[in-house]
Image (cartoon, rainbow, N blue to C red):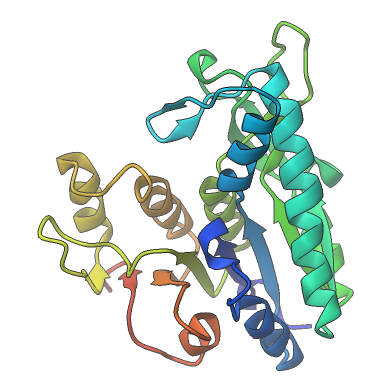
Length: 265
C-alpha cells in the first residue's frame, strides 16, 4: 500500500447523504481505483430528530451542540450506531470494503472536556493512528463516527465518552496522518464572501480574516478551522458542494468549483 501521506480524508455532511446522492458510489469507485480513503461523517440533523423523539431539547453555543448525559446517550447511539452502519452498509453493498469505527475504538480520538458550558463535548488532545493504519493496510476504508474517548477529565459521572464536532475530527486526522488531501462535502457551493460570491481560493490568513470578521457563518467556521489545522501537515484542503452529482469523483479527478484553502508557496 502507498504511504499514509497518500491517504485522502473525506468529511461527509448529513446533507450530502440523501437518497439521490452519488457520494457512496464515488467512494467505492475511488477505492477500486486504488485510492486509500478515510471517511469521517457527521449526522447532526438525525441526532436532533432522535433527541426530539426522546423529548430532549437541542441547544447550540457557537455552533456546537450542548450535550448533557441524556443527550450523549442519543448522540452515541445515532452517530456510532445508526448513521455509521448505514454508511458502511451502503459502501459494502456497492462492492466496496469498509469498516465502521468511532473515535472511542482503539482510542483513536482522545479528548478532554472542551468547555464545561457545552457539557459532554470533547477537544482533541491526541490521535492514535494505529487503528486507521491497520484498516488501511488491510484494504478497508475506515468510516469514523465523531464520538471520542475522554482521556483526561472526570465529569460528574466520570464518563469515558464525549461528543465531538465531526469537522474537527476530520481536520485532526488529516493533520496527524499528513494526507494528500482533505475534502469537505457540504450543502453549499463553498466559502463565500459577504455578498454571497464564491471564493475559489483562500490563503490561511484570508481564511482567518473571514472568521474574525464574521463573514464565515457558524456552520462554516468549524470546517475552515479544520482546514487550517490540517494544513500543518496536509498538501491541500477543499470545501465543495456535495449535492452536485459525482462531486467527490470530480474533485479527485481535478474538477473545478468549491473553495481551496492552501498555503501559498
